[in-house]
Length: 105
Image (cartoon, rainbow, N blue to C red; front, side):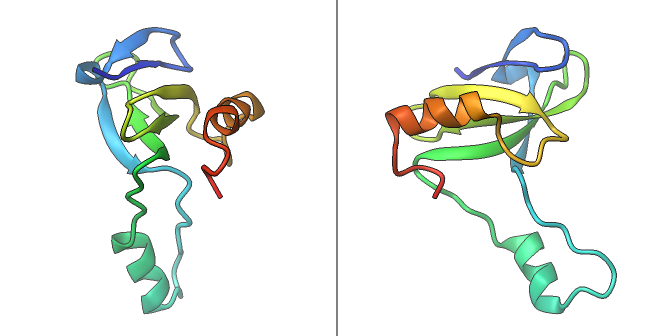
């Protein structure tokens, strides 16, 4: 079972207390975007076997969205960080690169 620490309330929550929200750090397009841009945003997602950056909501807790870095095959969680972040914190990236140097390229 996955365990995440909510970066807002600090509670360690199991995946049963959370709602998955899909891939993190997606480029969203506004009015006037091309059909190809909208198609990419709506349908094309990474589905790696390996390290993945994801959105999660602490549904049974504070209710806030946060981002997490985890390995999809081993279920290893590298850390969580606030949803407003544009990229993972340096310490999370260092943990990932120390164990999986080829990840997140």
